Image 1 (cartoon, rainbow, N blue to C red):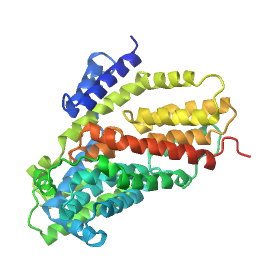
Image 2: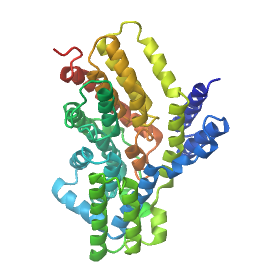
Image 3: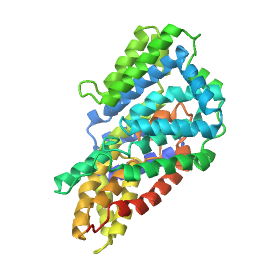
Image 4: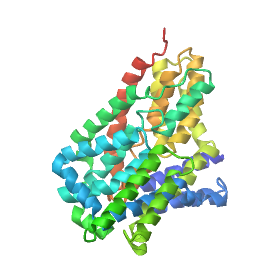
Length: 423
């Protein structure tokens, strides 16, 4: 049995455990990584490599910074301010949260945006007496959608543009993605307000209990509130500038260290604030995603798909099919890896049928950002898993509809903006 087939079997078992939740999500993810190591698909030194992944470190740092905002009383105060202007209605707050997250994600990391806004959103929920589970998933989805709008909003966009340039075609421009990114963001916001919210979990702890369970809110200290505020603003600015000398995870850890050193929260409180389910779930899926790439499992899926297209597929069929394939892979595989895998395939197929590859590449890149149906599809989804008290099926129920809607909108708009046979 080939390494690719073995990897797909392991992934299938992990996915089954995710859906049934017969065992905890983190154990299922780590168990899958360990199994791949024992079976020889991954070197044993790679099995726990996810724990040192930069995104995992970013998670930990931002959890601590978020806790500091609660311990000092800053997050509740910000929540009161937003509620004062946006009101306490669930829809009004959801639209405000999603708009802010999407706007920030156009020029900053969607992971960093979610991490920075999460404690603020929880604070808003506390003031409005709305369970955090009703707002955190919309926050994560909006961050993912906002990233589609610009070239630098998410890695798949950059990869698609780079693949076009490498193949001798005109690459996508900085704001060219906005033609599809803005409509998808608007559609996503409307979906969550009118449909998605009804699919979010309702049987949750009260917001006050959630806050008490995760953060011990201290008496408001104006000096420490200012310090924690400066910390989060500084971290967000550094993330937005995308400095090579200060990567996201380094900025987050420095911020967390400053929060502890300045007394915004104690060392033990910092450790307690980290959601370890999130950490181990993401860390376990990283080696599995790597195995999908290195074992050829991802390529095997792509090859089977290309074979199913037949001898002379139409450009619309190719674009639709690759959108579905990219979207399916990205639910369990890194969106960066899935785009890198499918981009050259898309260009090759487009050339073969004499069509412009721009529509095909745009479909692949956009689909790779539509990772809404699982908590491991994208870091923002994983980040809100613990604080939102979500289960795997909550993402499937709420996210699948959004994925389908994004697919329909994309298949309609993409060929209109990027014709298969431009004049």
